[in-house]
Image 1 (cartoon, one colour):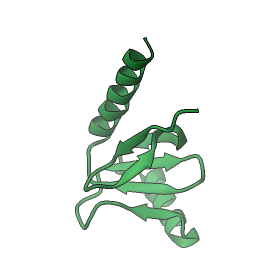
Image 2 (image 1 turned 135 degrees about the vertical axis):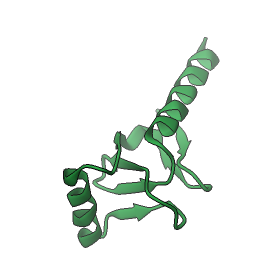
Image 3 (image 1 turned 45 degrees about the vertical axis):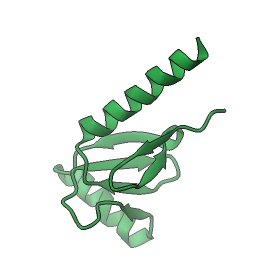
Length: 89
């Protein structure tokens, strides 16, 4: 199994294989999810003090906060997948 790493801003990197979803932080259920993760100690803030623009839910139950837009992170996933596909060909 090939480990793919994605930059989520400011030099912070996550494993692409462990990501379940990337969502926007505006909705009330997502805000509750953040508060619950903070209480459990599974919240990872990688914003470097900037405004949270994307929430990344990991398969381990960890919640990662990022200052990048969800679309930007998703594009980085697509770039990794397309470059991996070209390397295998």
